[in-house]
Length: 68
Image 1 (cartoon, rainbow, N blue to C red):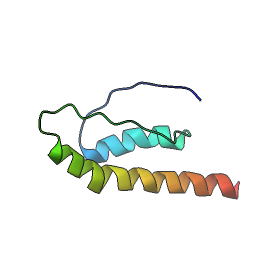
Image 2: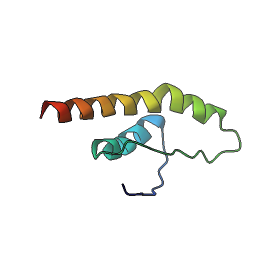
Image 3: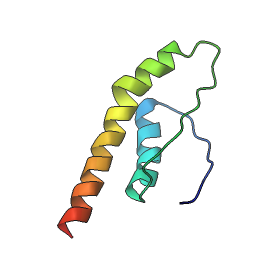
Image 4: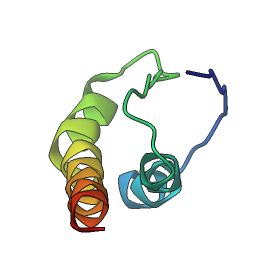
């Protein structure tokens, strides 16, 4: 296990694409920090867009590994 710290920003879709590269590389745990005094809109985007996209990428990655 190794730890990598990286910073990213943008729309939920662009963040999902960026974080998806880590998931495809084998990351199984991600820590997401919101830099806002009003985090509720970002939490909603994370729940509705980012997490489902990352889960889908993780499922595709897992399926690819088990079929190999």
